[in-house]
Amino acid sequence: MADEPTLGILYALVWTIGPPLIFGGGPLLFSWLVGNAYQKRKLNETAAREQASMQAFGGRDPLTNTVNIYTGETITHGHLLTANVSIGPSWWQLLRTSLKQLIGGRIYSLDNVLEFGRREALQRLREIAQAEGVDYVINVRLDTAEIVTNKGRNSKTAAVEIFAYGTGVYVAKPTDEA
View 1 (cartoon, rainbow, N blue to C red):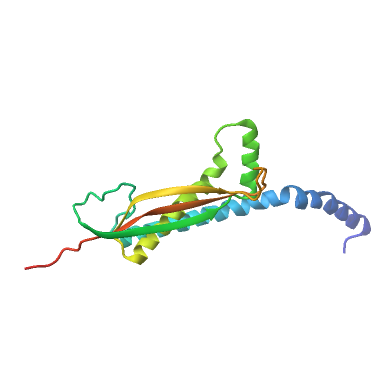
View 2: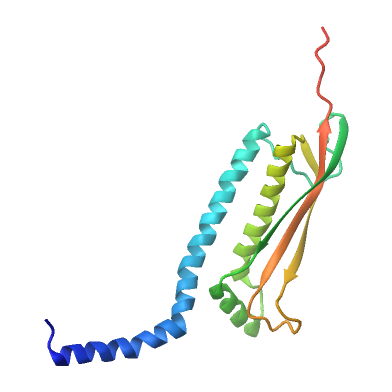
């Protein structure tokens, strides 16, 4: 068992380093480690779902931002499809954003968040199209709304809603007349 002076030094060390770590940089360090790993995992999951959707549509992406499908197929009917996702950066990314705003320039720390949000919204639109049995989704658009908790734009939290929408169309199936 440790003697009294060693325990005293150990307690002093814990009380000297512990509170600043817990109340100072600890949450930010946790946010950096866990937030980056979580975002990377979610982005990889979305990429795997994208590949599965492409295969379900015969190796092609059913989404297009054009008004026509340019395949020579006849569109029989269609309807509006929508999907959305709300996402927010980690505390670490918010801190980096705040520091970058002081200096100026492009804020790279939010690129991963926005990339994930866009890809996830489009993937959800693909999955809805697959569930409804549409052949293509034409005229796809993305809309973004910022969500803040107070009016002064001095909020310490941030979130973005990304809304994807397009027209799901059905094409005429060829008839076998022999």
